[in-house]
Image (cartoon, rainbow over all chains, first blue to last red; front, side):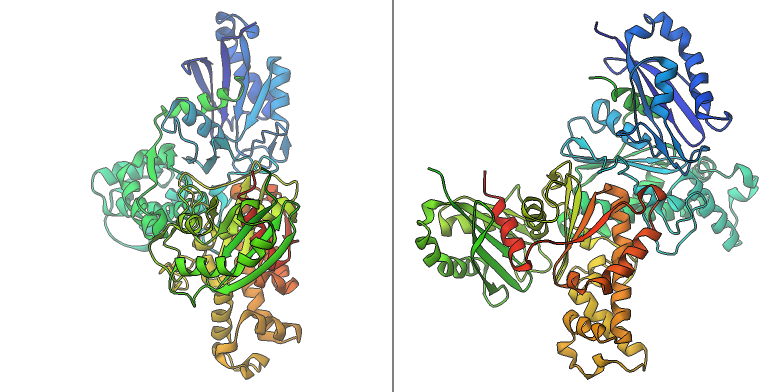
Length: 317
Length: 317
């Protein structure tokens, strides 16, 4: 029997998004819950199940659903497990696809959240028709999905694509979650932007709109708002972040030579404040054969939909 | 008509190797010429053609050859051109496959030298049966070939795999050939090892066997010989080189998660002097999910044969 819908669940460090997607890629229902306010992955899945239940019933019942696609940090497509995800509240190896299957009683497939976003972008977004591109998700962490010859790069064990944890400054800033020093994520995630902001505010007496903001509220969005008002320190924060990301992207361009790099997530919304220094630094570090070739694109998908679409795309045949 | 032989040509920064290979992967004839002592790529190919002519005739004539496979820095499989290769004496865009085709009157295909070595390793060497691995060639330069899902990663334009030119220390050592600062190749090539040695000798008054060697003869091989005799500075040179290479390899493991990394070329012959610090630094920079998984292997192919085999493998159907 032909099934009309798929469920997509995207588990992030702070929030989990989920929804129902039809064959054309329309998200016909979606919602989100906090990832940290539940005590276990089983409970998280139960909360999502209960939330979706009325919509599942009104769309023909669970037998009209092809499966549940899951995106999560360190999600492994081969084993269906999330293993030692630094940005999730659960440690160890979590059999997430199995937990979902027990709860929903349908097929469940898992991959890492950035890979899921890459699949969504390839099917419905800015990477339509591309065979070689890189998806970078700039959120609580920095995720990445590499597509080569039209296929996702999973690596021999399913864990490929951890660009965010590569070292950009040996012995640089300590990443609290991983203990690794100088990783790209320690600078270019929302968390990294916050730390850079605090460091810059402390290192100078220059006036800044950011000084009026309580330290707990000093997030990437606040920095963006200040940059739009011309705040010099806020602009400097994006310059620094863009330069570091540009350096990292130059490295992956020289390794995989993609047609495009697609940026997704909250930080990407800083637009030219981030993209101008990024592009400049990126080009300056490329061999001539790579220069002025690679498109730097912003995701075409609504940020609330992309991960759900990508995760759901895993389960269509 | 079934053809029995292929020709492989591997063009390096200093020397060019070439040979005749049969279907079983036996190199039945090989020789080499200097790359820098000819005035043009046309002359280089003419010299090789004249050298091979007697062997071609004694093996059934050119009609018994399937084609000429070429490996060269910045060699592009899609266009058959070598473009702006920093380590070759010719600048600009060289239509190498076309030059070879005009000279030999048979099919000619080109890829970058490290990709060719990776193909050779996959067909005849340490990567037999592997679908995800990385080949690193440590010679005058540092080359790399990435295999994902059993396919070489060429990228959208054919230039993927320039791991040697990725930046490992932002604003680090200047690479004379590229003008890029802090690239892996500026440290981990034979040239880089020589510079590291000179720097270490200059920074201290410690006695060293290396001080007795005329500066022009201070190459990676001389440093290896000194290390074998217990020379502290020579050992330190390999420690530093191995640590930097280990850091770079940690980054590519987190991106592509290969089953193995295969090291090839002169420097790899330094064995444990290089591999011990490499392995230690590599593991220290990996996320736990990648630790103690990736095999670091030395090439199984005779160094004189590997590139010829790989290049020749390009033209078999």
